[in-house]
Image 1: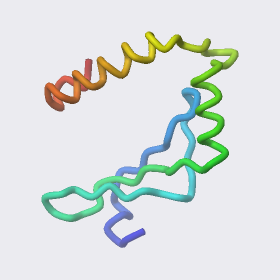
Image 2: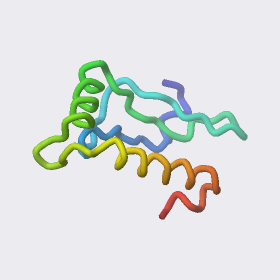
Image 3: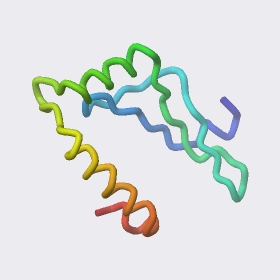
Image 4: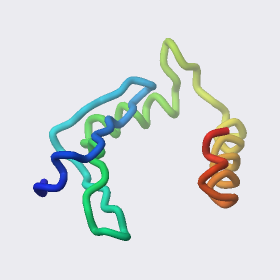
Length: 90
């Protein structure tokens, strides 16, 4: 981690809707200044397996989604990203 990372926004990753902080961080660099603007926790293999299992089979609090439901969510996210950053709030 660089010295400029000390003032950066630090965000967790989310697994099954729960925030998870890890010691392994990804530095997010602001392209115009080259400064670290954020730190994001990175997932490990065990956490990835947990997320994949939850996505495929659901959990007690979140039932499994159909392929079509996942497709609809990803399509909406793609369209929001393609139309500009202001539309990400919807």
